[in-house]
Length: 565
Image (cartoon, rainbow, N blue to C red):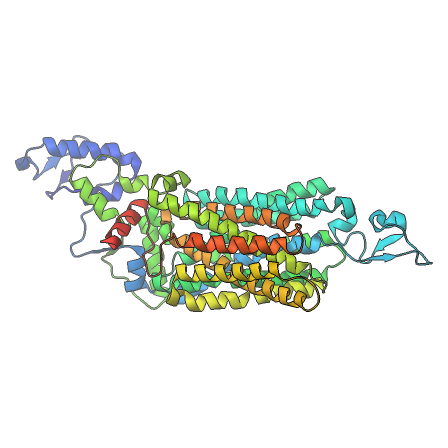
């Protein structure tokens, strides 16, 4: 049956429905035929053959008076920037931070060195390093920790630090891998589901480790899946939030991490006699999260949009509006930041392949191709590395306090929360850049002061206070960097860039224990230098407060140019 095309002016928007790469040859043929066809014959073009099922459907006419908005504009004008839908979605997704805390910090209790008691009747025992052979026994039993079970004391003590370094090495690798996968075909939600399942599986297998080296290998695998949980949850939780509320809400994600650490201390106190049982108990919540929470979590509309799944992105935006008691007009459609420019280029005969399709997903290579994002990435990597050295280094120093381990961990986790509150209150008033500089300088100055104070008498208390203020400042910086780093890069490469920054942070976590063993005053000097240098590097980053969250590299380049005019 012959088909007729009604007369209309051919332009790029007429084929935007089928702008995927596999349809570009069809589009080229249509354009070529249009150029060859005289104007008087465009009133009715007779199809030479019936369209096959595999052929794309004919392009739809764009509605007159329709609005084509970016996601930020659609949220601000119609769906709502932070309403009931975003609050529920944020809480559900951010619960994954507590899971990361369980898998990361469980080593504090599983690898602790329990108290020893002399079992000899006369109270005379030999060298403690000989443990049971010298008459010593572990108070909580030989199964209470890996140190007690495998004798990781004295000359073998380095193996505890090695396991920690191996875990964070796995985190560094996994952050980059899953950061790329979440930007490509797997998506934010799919990647988060995969890493949670892997966390549960590796955690349960760790409880069955027959020896130290099997244990270390399984901790490496656990780190591989754990390292990206936080960044995936952060991006998925904040991308559906409007620009004016994204910063403040995003800062709240770290309360879930601190809460997870506090909960871990409570759970560990209930199972002090078996490190294997502790691994089982801390792994099961990941399974519960996948089964009970993830079905109620939506994929990011921004990921849908950059993957050219406009209908799915629009469906999420309308669901947000409905839950928030708002309404999105029927004539509103979504577009990428640079889609108007691409269509204009199409009208002018700017090539066959759709640029938007080419930028639907990006990799770290795309970040380095642009000078703007290349400089931002290099700075972000160094800043995250330095911040991580200070944060984990000071945290390890606090663990060395001669107090109850469970109470100390709870107090430390609660002590970080005021820093999160402070940054949340000041974030949208001072901006990202001044706040990052101020908190890093605060930590660097007090750590430097701590290196100059002798550790004797009352001055020991003064040094401890310097360390506490240093932790306060660097915790605020650590919290802020997730927001700041995310806003520095467009959606198409955001997770890949944040994956690199997270890898750098994990490298800092590996270095931190090596700094701590240098003595009493040298670590404070190193942490102080790292804080001050990090603050100086932040000076070269741009401010992102109240700036749009770009979707594509081209959109960001165009937007940055317009801001400079």
